[in-house]
Amino acid sequence: MWHSWGCSCGCTFSPIIYEEGSIHMDQHVFDQWNFSHAIWGFALGAVTHAPRSVQAWKIGFLFVLWEFWENVVEVAFSTYAPGQYMGDSVVNSVFDMIPSMLGVWLGRRGFGAWPLVVVAEVAATRAGFGIHSVFLGHQGSICDVRAPGEFGTCAQAYLVRLVVLPVLFSQLDGLLWRCIAARRRRAGAPSKAAFCPKAT
Image (cartoon, rainbow, N blue to C red; front, side, top):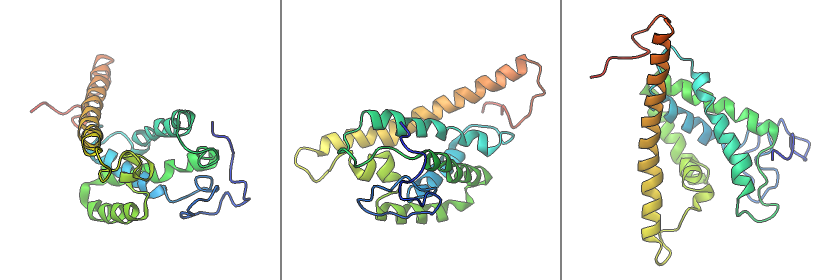
């Protein structure tokens, strides 16, 4: 996977904003999906149980797992037509981390930026590359509620992806940071109130 280093068009380091049907999408240093990366980063930074002492870029490294999923698992088992999508280029995949970590930083700084994030999400979703497009299937392909007999399937898929998975992630994230705090205490590391807050 990661079949190319950059874009075969020779303009790898020129940003590109959505060319429908273009084989160069996802090959440039920045592309339209950077909006959703920043929005996802903000959401992650806002909900994580990580203590304030942990730098945002360390939390943002979770997006490495997303890049692996997107460019290895999803590409290997995708239903895309041949030549339609072959995964990100190496350059694009690496630079996807920048808006992701910027979003985490904003989310960790406080929730005050949420109006800007909402505007960005609405604009990105209307253009076809917001959180809705990514989380519910690229270009919203998870299901079509307008199709006969699809309402039940769509409702189930939306419930799992919008309720069950976020709750599961929040629980696992909290467990991870509690385990890290306990390990630090056992190792005799100086405890910080922010690192392991008292249970209420």
